[in-house]
Length: 126
Image 1 (cartoon, rainbow, N blue to C red):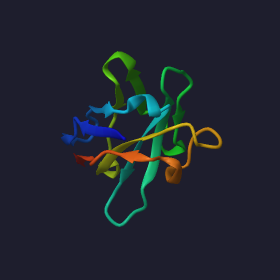
Image 2 (cartoon, one colour):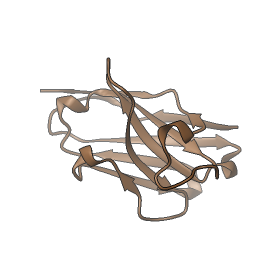
Image 3 (cartoon, rainbow, N blue to C red):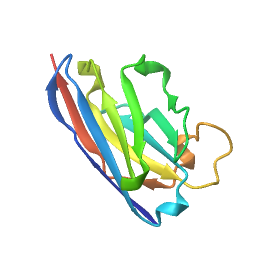
Image 4 (cartoon, helix red, strand yellow):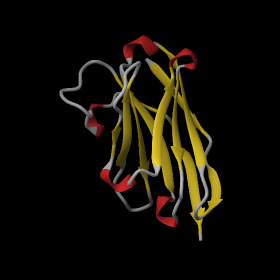
């Protein structure tokens, strides 16, 4: 079992930045990929970025247009999502998730992620 805890959400003005953190604990050796997702009210959960633990060449969703950066600190078992030039449409609950070795191809699909955090709210006002 992998336990994930997100932090760093909050309220910002449009154009601002935030850094989300996702700290992993438990059987973290079971996870080899972590991702960030978001879900706005009334919308489907959207994949934002994914990173292979200990690897490079992360995946980014097409909608981000270079505004978000995923990174990891393996020593701290933490994955980050830095968000720049935030827009009101970025308002959502943000989740991190982890998956073990069972995914078929890069990036893993949302349904392949096994462990999920509780989410952290990001609100961007104009």
